[in-house]
Image 1 (cartoon, rainbow, N blue to C red):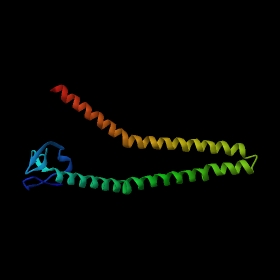
Image 2 (cartoon, rainbow, N blue to C red; image 1 turned 90 degrees about the vertical axis):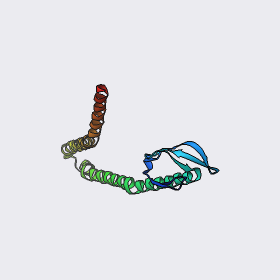
Image 3 (tube, rainbow, N blue to C red; image 1 turned 180 degrees about the vertical axis):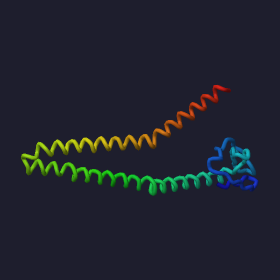
Image 4 (cartoon, rainbow, N blue to C red; image 1 turned 90 degrees about the horizontal axis):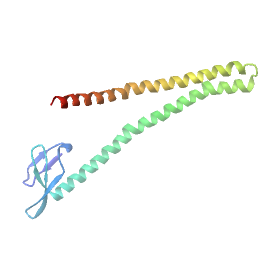
Length: 160
């Protein structure tokens, strides 16, 4: 982001490096602000600062919308499709045969239904195990990292 000083000097900073205006000043009859930056405080006219912050808000909204459109929405669609496919497989492989056996065969009923029920239970347990594995792979390392950082900070603080 380029910021123009009241003297006309142009500075280049990243958005996160610029602080909020902390004091009002009047220069050449115009209202101005003092802003903290890595290069020290600079003075910026108020109308210029308003234009900059409005531009940054628009940029933030554009990036947020693009993030939702191209990252979160496709992921959500894929998850919903995967769930629908899983339900379809579940219905056609496990529930439909059980219904057919129950409806049209009397003597197979007591052999096949418990077998299909056992497969049902195995599929559910397998799904829960897969979810747990995903949890361990993605979330547990983050928790451990957070805990290690906290412990290192504690050790560092105790040494001082």
